[in-house]
Length: 338
Length: 288
Image (cartoon, rainbow over all chains, first blue to last red; front, side, top):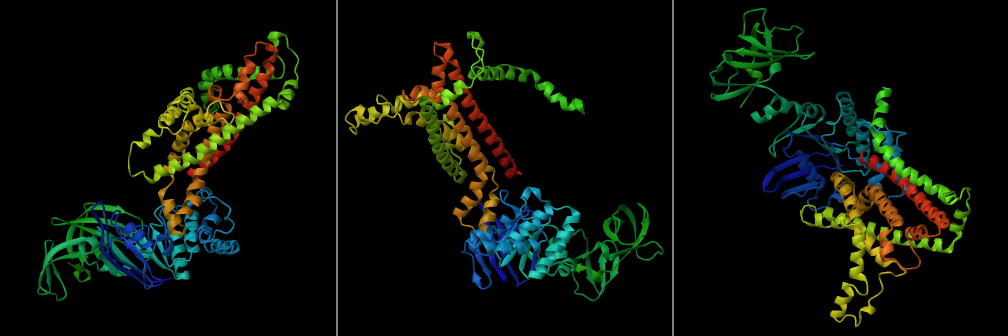
């Protein structure tokens, strides 16, 4: 286990910049997610850390050692790929013991380690099976065991849950979280799934267009994004333009009381779940419901106020109907101003 | 349901009738004759005498040995060179060149033409000895080693490997191209060096296709007639050539000997098909 630090990492392919000054420090035993859309450079970052790609500029430290020029086979940063990539001609036990065999370890040591890992990933008794005889979840456990067998300094997980169905995904998330805590192994996880990143990470680095835009704890990233593009990536929010003047926030949809702030023109972001609906009194802003989407534990609404569409997520049991008049309450003191 | 199950067989019936009508009847007739039953000339008794005689005949055994030798030598050389060629094509695949087409040309050249090419180039009266003589490297064309009609069968072997190397390379290259590049990355990432990646990942994954293409070229060389007939020595003769000569014997009572040789060749071919089938199942497993 080691801490890992990326300092101003740059990478281009055919003149196109893929990574632009990526800097990131992951503490020993920490679990951090690189969160971003497809093509933003997350997997490239992972491959550079593993040594499968060379960075054009910058420095990569594992522990205190600069490993930028250390070849992939000696770096100790092991990737678990999205599609598991088990060796099809080897049994589960041979797959897990592969790294140790390549390191020319004694056969008894390999067997002992493989048995220990099979137990750890709850695949006892399946050592003689071939990959094509395993389910998706089992394949992933084998891939994780294979990575852990070589005692990596850093574990790199590339979209580890994206090939699993919903039930199995939850189970594997919990399994990997518990395993990582138990082994206290420094882990970098790449994902495009914000919910996954929010649930599983100690910290999240949001990557957009080859740059890290924000690194923070999940709740901070979600509640206080530092830019509209980060906020946008984390979900559908409401953005309302206006002016702050003497404790008031003047907007196109109305005038709101606000704590004393610097007087200026701003864009306020307010989360759909922080807006409340009410039709029991005539207080609040009046609007009309233009869309209702029922999702069981919550209901998604779109409400038209003047010419602005406002998104609302309600956890209430009460379901309002389409075209119904409604009053909304929003507190901009819970909002984020850009 | 039953109708659906029968349907493909009904659709295949016309072609299967022709195949079995010609192939199976020929095989059955050949088998009967190998057992001494050849009604057209009044031989009606079944006997294993011809098998016994052929299997202890020194001429047959030396022909069998010669056929086996030229097949194994040419197939092993073709596999080794073909795999290396396929690997070189793979590692240079970013350079899209004409070599990808050129190397396949020998595959479409008929074996008879390949044999004539070898004869024209490697015989002592051929192009190569003449060039060497012209350059003063050899004083007389007869100083050039006898590579055609020689007892070591080098002419036949040259003819086979010229055609088989591209075939092996093509089959193996296709498999190599389809082996997930990322498996190599995974192996490197787990601590293997490049040599270990080749021997522990690429080679085992290529092995089913190497074995299957080896079986194809070996079975072909073992049963092929043209090259040994055109380039082979007077003695020993390759098995198919021996079978042909026995078959052409004006004494028709000699026919069972030819058929015994053909049955032995058929037996080996069936064995090769069974091995190929087993290996093919392995290929399917690896590609899943």
